[in-house]
Length: 85
Image (cartoon, rainbow, N blue to C red; front, top):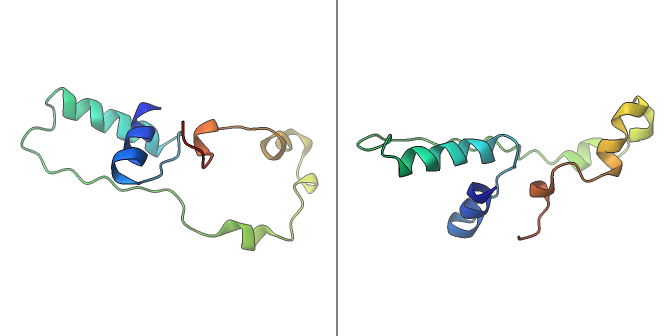
């Protein structure tokens, strides 16, 4: 979680807490322990930039199997909110 906050605070880059956040955490750890010394690193942020609300505006999640409803009704990943710590 610290890596997600670090990228947002230092670089203004929003990361999801599931995949890219964990990748940055590993990258930060490698940088701290010297594994990356003398290497060029490319970090490719794969956070989806597609505007999904327009694509799914006419869909109703109630049409999905009931086991999926909680993903629309409950907070699933707190790091994905647009709020600060």
